[in-house]
Length: 73
Image (cartoon, rainbow, N blue to C red; front, top):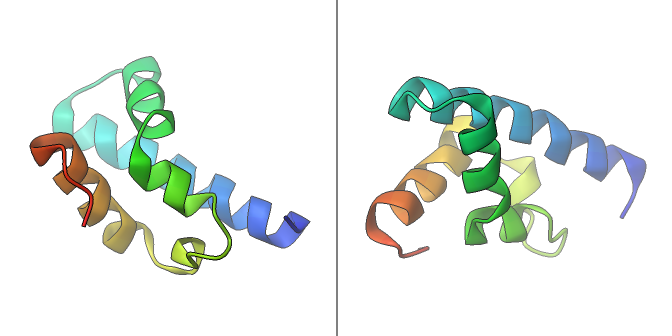
């Protein structure tokens, strides 16, 4: 994976953790645990999926759906 892609993933991850903390009232550790253990994050880290090109709000909608329903669309 290129450094540019890794940087984009890290930036998105930071935004997603902040969004999780705001949405669910979680502390940073809980938000990081939820993100890193999610199927959404696995897809985000897969360059072939191209999810890292999307905006944080778009990716968060997948993550939020996964957390609330257990299903990744």
